[in-house]
Image (cartoon, rainbow, N blue to C red; front, side):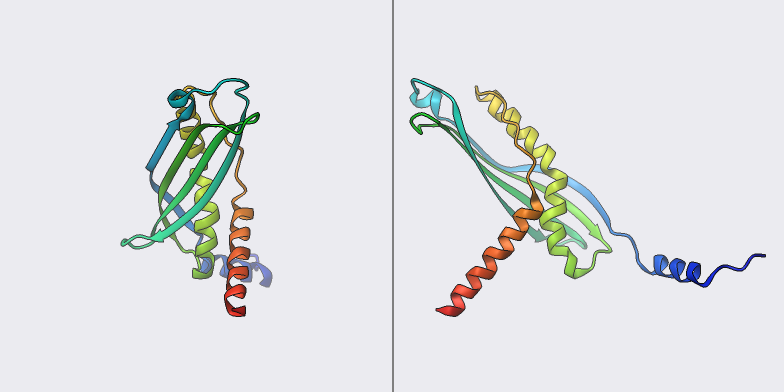
Length: 169
């Protein structure tokens, strides 16, 4: 019987002690949605070329069940005419997911909830936005992929700056 090198024994031991992170999406849903077709309500004349702004906010909270979390992606989309800046439509969407997350160290939980979980449900949110804008009488709006890492870092920097500003006062 061949003897295992010492390095092999160490690597086997380290892989056995580190359980792999397990994540499961238990549910996805539209928590709240509002679509206003301002063109149909008020009418707009002239060039209808849109200028679209998209704002995204994230929210995550622990559920009363073991290892379960709710993550909400809040999306506010406004379309205005390029020429006069007249509003064309407004879409407010809160899209949520319920996640079962196990074997994740506590210090990694917050970034995981704010980056990986939204990344998993984003394709479905994008589909809802596309369908609603199309069904509302506009060309389907296909959102660009959102960089949730950059969004997370920007929020952390904003909070640090806000905390520094409060300490200065």
